[in-house]
Length: 288
Image (cartoon, rainbow, N blue to C red; front, side, top):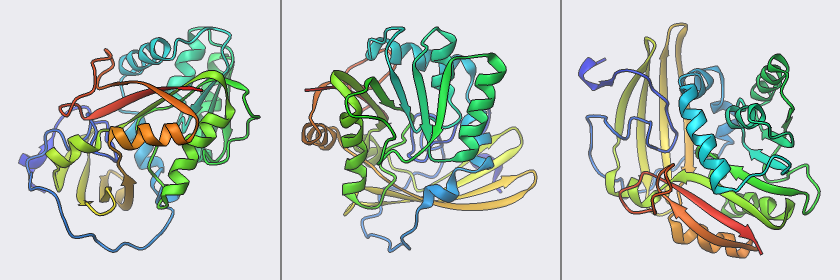
């Protein structure tokens, strides 16, 4: 392992090359692959979100960062204490728990990974917070039509599925469960930034554990195909992931097909208008 290629300090990895991942500072920067790589079709997220990702992807995030992101969610979605809110793909409930701490009493977090749901539920119980966590599929939400005031999908929890219809179904499900004039917020990596700044390889380090990311961008499908190797204290683990990345215009069109009216796109938590220089994009839409 070449120590010069290691990004030191607190690390919050991102499967998309987002603002906190090694796409930002890694040494090896060598352009975009233009020949698609044939990959075995599998539900990669069923294997990917394990204890390694929890440790590197959630535990390394500072409480202050979660607080700042929650500030943004409250303002962007214009949340009121009585609003019924869904944290779609909530992970271990970072934002759901923070909302509950702030007095929002009708928040539900949903995630596919049962272990994360159990941990979030335990945290809520320990802190005596009024928040519910459920295990489920974001393509088939366990909520009635027009029952929620706001839905958010944060930290690139979109574009997982191989089929375009399945990815679009996530947006349609969000629209289905929203009340008229309900608000939807999506936070994902900016595909246009990735293409302009793509890096094929990067090392990162957090608390004496290392992650090697090897990436290939498929221009034919706009998928970022990655091989991740964790060098953890208890051994080495390998994972594959494949994430569909979207440009703003694609998401705006997808919103429209789902009955959502696009309202704004920001590149920062301070709601700076989105540009090509922003690694992430935060989109707000309202149900028509």
